[in-house]
Length: 168
Image (cartoon, rainbow, N blue to C red; front, side, top):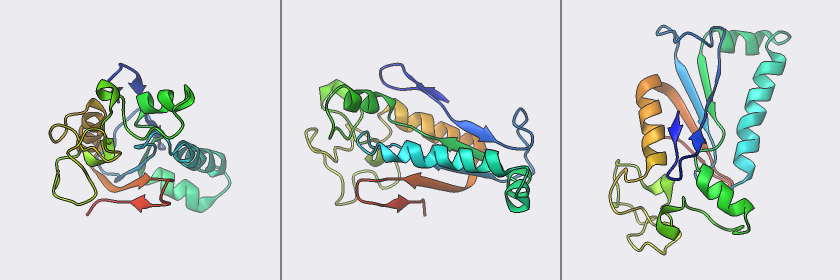
């Protein structure tokens, strides 16, 4: 899909009866994980979705119908740089790696940027929203991808607060 701040690939998996072809007649669905680096369970959830759909495609008529009639995209890990930092020993790291202080990718999107009480303009905050809306490459990778596939449903998995967040 694109690259992170540190140049790591951000990848998505497409599950479809025609994976090499973008079918404009079929709705797109997107599942994404790991906006926050310390939420290491979310890539497992998203890859479990892939495993379930692929392993049940031939034997479960509901799964077959769903795959045949939708373009399903799974983005297991958006915050690839933050994830690397977690596995290098910063187990509670949440943000990307911008400048050593990081930006909370989940609070960097332009819609109502800086308007909620759940973000901060202080860069050392766990909820630092960045210097401006969409300042982070990870944010832009996901926004560009969503703009391209136009999902009818986009579910974002989070584990720290046991939340499932979806757009308006």
